[in-house]
Amino acid sequence: MLLSNSIYIFSLGASDLAEKPSKNYEDLGNTVDAIFKAYQQVVQFIINFLCCTENRDEACCGGVAANGELTCGNVINKDKVKVCANPNKYLWFDAIHPTDAANRQYTDQLWENKDYAKPHTLQDLVGNEILNIAKPPEATDGNINPYPKAGSLGVGN
Image (cartoon, rainbow, N blue to C red; front, side):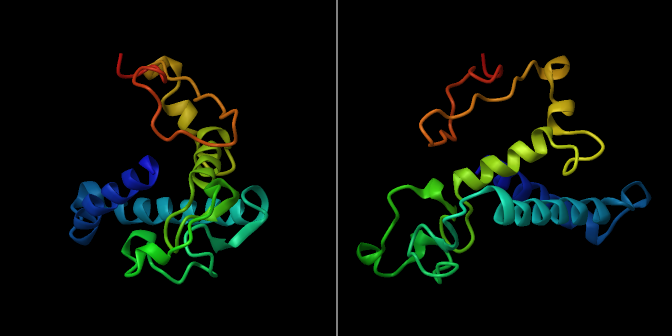
């Protein structure tokens, strides 16, 4: 969720600059485009190979193909909505929101897979030399806590 929010916030500010680029920002549009193309490639990779092999086409909330509902929280009859017991067995929570499991696969690829993050991975950019951040520990119970305790990742102490 943090990564997708960050990309969204970046895209809001970058779109203004991309509309009227100065000489210093001539390649900004290409950069924004490259970010979203990389995101699409990794999501496709997750769909095809890594994540949620049981439930690639169904969403956790609603259970229909691509869920039908744009977002689970905007359903008119909220009391009639079916939400799955374990969202991490699904690629999508609703029609537009990937589950934490899908986001984890995506961030793992950007963190250390040079096939998806070139020329430097996120690990290269924010590694121990810069912010003393170590890779977050793997979840042990099959669920991912998107909100680790402050300081547990080497920041916020």
